[in-house]
View (spheres, rainbow, N blue to C red):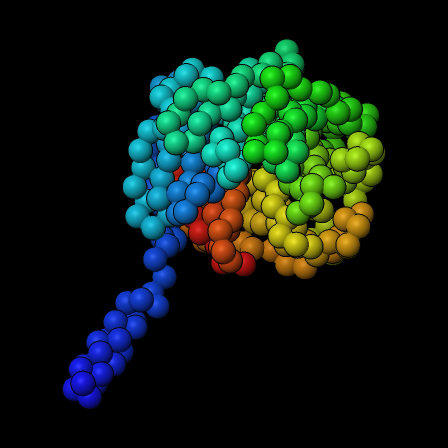
Length: 315
């Protein structure tokens, strides 16, 4: 018995380094014909990416594994560019924006079956991002001063219809001169844990806005600190307790913002600049998700020039 215990302890000691090693990849390559503008973390170690390509793989959705980088097709090409996406873990449904098509689609994330489609708007329109709360999915439109709300049932089942949430006049398109990007207004969107507040970034003006979901009142968030560009070129957003992460696509960095408890003000505490600034292949990050203490960001879709990657950042 004593000999067996000693051998067991030795085996555990030898196994410890392998067990303690990190099983997640830092870099995962996407196909050269697959510029991904949408990204979502799935169940377990899975993730989803959608093709923003103008031809070929347009609208295709792939599912991958964060440990191996292996990719497989969930949805074949549809001919409609896809943008922001989020998974509802209750229903295992994937909510996906459809860019200039002015709508959205909901897929069964296990089979790729189309569950719902929505037509929110007509040109000019650009359905850009989506966030899920317990009772609704909210989509942004970069060329309309609106959010689109799809009610969700207790198990995450989406309603057949949607409602429109008006945004202030600052979200009228185009954004106008003197802005970071005159073609993109409302872009990334995130929500507080209880879903009582949304935060939306105005890419062109470099501003953040808080939306109170009980009243749909919209207030501009006061930002301080940082390099003076505020939320300029802001793209994907992620709220982690009271820390807001803002992907600044063409500035090749992620702003880390410490938010007040009411989300009406925030201080830019620092920037995550690597690996974007040292590796040209990872520049122009767009969509983001997280698992554990790691952020995952897709890069390159806005350049339209391969290679395209999903990269991991520790925060």
